[in-house]
Image 1 (tube, helix red, strand yellow):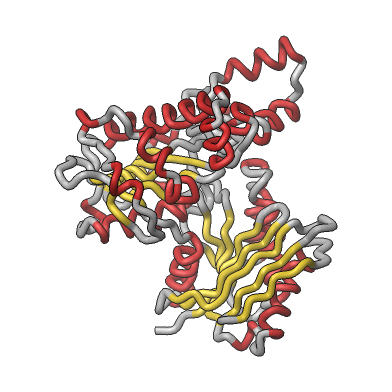
Image 2 (cartoon, one colour):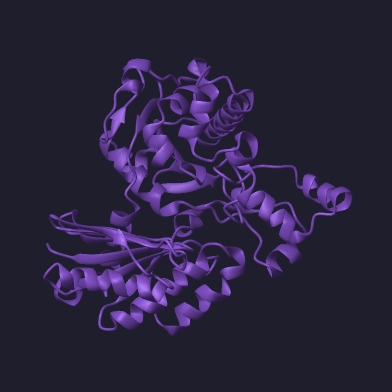
Length: 398
C-alpha cells in the first residue's frame, strides 16, 4: 500500500525533512535547510537521484520551507502531486495533554504553544514549522507526533517527583521523558530481531546522541526513563549536565550570583562534554584523550560511568532484560563508548564481544557473545519512519 508522508523535524535554526512511503517503508526524498537566519544559510535536497547542495538566503523558517517546496518543483514534480496522505511533525513536548499522535487544528496549535514553557528550546521551532506547513499545504492532514507520548505509560512511582504535591499539580511538574519516538521504533525493531513479540520483550534502550537518554521498556511500554520534566535530567550529554544535585543551583545563585538565566545557560549550553572536555563532539573528545588530554579522559569516564549507573538501575527495575540496545549517533557509531559503558557487568549477564563491537556496519547487529544472558545490540534509529507510520495510522483510521 502506498502512503506518502512528508516528515518535518524543525529546530531553532534548521528544518530537516524526509518524504517517505510509509506503506513500503521507502525513502523517496530527504534534505535539510540549516543555519536559518544566518548569513551562511545552506540547503541540501536529495530527490530521487538528484542532489542539490548550495548556499541560500534563508532569512527565516518561512523562507526555508518555501525552499523545500520549490526543490520538489525544480526536480520535476510538485510536492502536492506526490500523493501525500499526511504531513508528520515532530513536536518534543506534549505535556500531560497529548499522549498519542493528533491531527492538528487551531486548538492543537494553541495547546502546543501553551506547553512552550516546558520545552522553550524545542516546542517553539516545531510550532513555527507546523504553522507554516499548514499554510503551504492546507489540503493535507497535518499530524503532530510527540516525543513525550511514548512515556505516558510510566507508572506513578516513576513519574512522580517528591515535591509538594499541590505545587507539582498546579505547575504540571512530573517526569515526562523524551526521545520517545526513537525508543518506540528501536524497541519494536529490537524485539523483531530477537524474534520476540514486543509485548514479551524487556529492553534497555540507550539513545546516545548530542542529547542522550536511557529507557526501560517492558512489553513495549516505557516503565522508567532518565529524562524528566525537561530534557536536562539523566545522562551526560553534549552540552547538558544531566543529573546534578539541585543544591548546586542554589549554591551558585547564593555564592556566585548566578541568575535564573545564567543557570539555564550553564546547564543547557555550557555543561556536559563541552563543560568537561571543551568539546561536545565525542570524536573530538576521543582525539584529545588519545593525545593525552586528562580532562578529555575524565570526561569520557564520567560519560560512561553515568550510563553504567542507569543500566544497573534499570536492570533492577525490569528484573531481567532480554537486551540492551544502543542507538543514535554515538550509540550506533562509537565502539569505545559501547564497550566502556558496559565494562565490569559480566556477573550481571552483560558483556560486549570486542570483535563484534568493532565490526563497522550501518545495519542492526549483536555485539555480545552468544552465551551472554543479556543480548547487547546496535539498532539504528529511524524517527522519521516512525513519525510517518504513526501519522499514516492516524489518518487512515479516520
